[in-house]
Length: 305
Image (cartoon, rainbow, N blue to C red; front, side, top):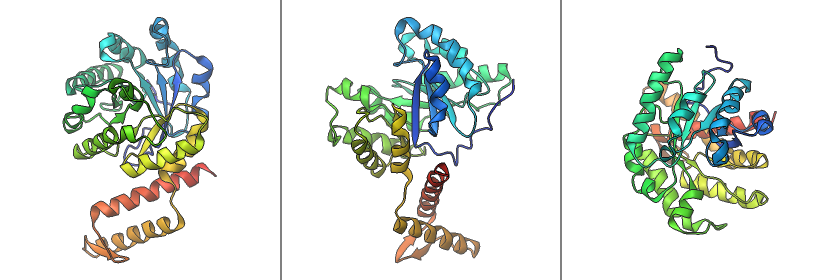
C-alpha cells in the first residue's frame, strides 16, 4: 500500500483549523481540501444520519487518497457506545489516513483499546507502526472530570485533546453565548490537563454562528489566550479568520519573538541556557514558545502567497 502525501511532521505541523465534511456527501468530500485548512476531518459521526453511517464508510475511505499537499487527513469515527466504532476504524484504515478523531471519550481504556486495534490493523496492512494518530474529544461532563487522567495516561498515538464545546454545553445544560463565559471553566481545565500530561496545546471546539465572523475572531483570540492552539471550523469561510486569529503576530510581537529566538540560540551555542532579553528572563520553555509562535506566523504568511 503506497501513500499519496508525505508523512505528517507532528512537531511542526500547524493545527489551527480543523474543517469538517460529512462522510456521505460526495461533493463536500471532494472540496474540503480546497479551503486551506490545516486539518480536514471526514465525519462519520454527527454529520451523518444514523441510517447512512455504515454506507458512508465507503466514500470516506475512497476520498482519503485524493488529498494532496501538507493537509492532515483525519476521520471522525462514531463513539464507543454506538457499536460502530471498530467497524468504522477497520473500514477507513489506509496509508493515506493521518489521524482518527474519537468522540465522547470518557476513559483511558477507550484510547488504549483503539490504539491496540490500530497496532494490529497497521501491522496487517503494512502501514508504519504508530502512523495513525488519535485526537480524543472531551465533550461530556464525565469526560471533563476525567480529562487529567486522559492526558496523563494517554497512549503515544494521542496528539492532544479536543474540547467538544457544543456537546459539552448540552450535557451541562447551558446556552452558548458570544462572550463564552459559560465555557471558561471547561476550556481552562482541558488546557491545564493537556499541558500537565505533556501534550501540546489542545484544540478548541467550533464557533457555531457561521455568519458572525467578528464574533468568531473575538472568540478565537480568547481561545488562544486561554491556551488553545486552534479550533474546529464548521464552514469554509471560517478557515482563514481562525488561522489568522491563532497565529498572527503584531509587528511588535514578531520582533520580540525573533529577538528571543536569535538571542537564545546564540547564547545556547556559547553554553548558556538562561539569558535576559528586553529585561525579561528567558529559558528553554520561553524560547520554545517564541519559536513556535514564529513558526505559526510564518505558516500564515506562507498561506497568503
